[in-house]
Image (tube, rainbow, N blue to C red; front, top):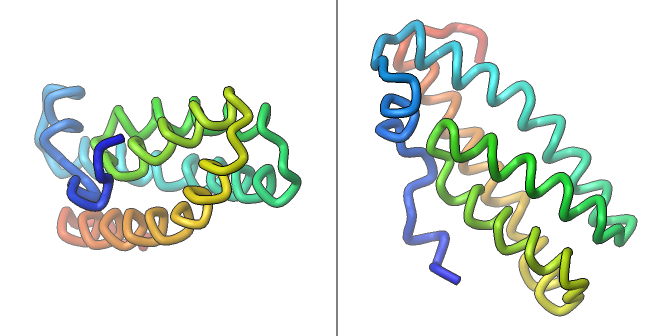
Length: 125
């Protein structure tokens, strides 16, 4: 697996390429929508991890990974890919080693999302 920490937390170039628009309105709409929905997924994922539910971890990681890919949340996308694979293979060692990183990677992304939203004029941060 590639070292996720060496990757950007948020790569706006991915979002701009995906939407074909670099306007503040598009960026804030996409990022605020992602933040709202991803927060729910991360909470459900943390709950599934506490319950040791690999099928739920795999499903949630798959969905969250796809959402991350749409906006350029590179570190979280890479972590979700690794967690999804480990959960599908029921590899408890990898899950135990990588699940604790979820909170830190999510916090770093949330911080970057809020900073970027403010920078683009979005005040609901």
